[in-house]
Length: 118
Image 1 (tube, one colour):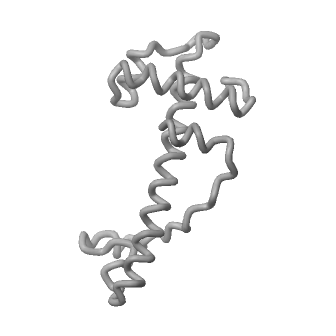
Image 2: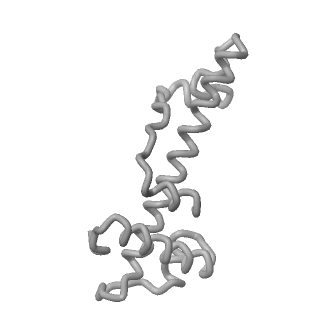
């Protein structure tokens, strides 16, 4: 989370594109982004690394959006604002973690210059 905040001022690098699998391929539990079909270990390592980096970037970005949403939902200016406990329950977090995410989200909103009601 702190790493994401540090990078928020930097230009974001685009992760490797995720290739979405057809429904019949994803039904096979052994099938994962066609990695099982790669025979060259160099190619397998390169593609698996690309996927790992893409998933990490997606996770970081999703966490930032979670934090922004939590901050917006807990904004005291909202007539329908949620308590920290309510945010924690909705997101399946502890109250302490929800409090930290709300603060993180407020920081992201301030850094972006957007009003929290966006």
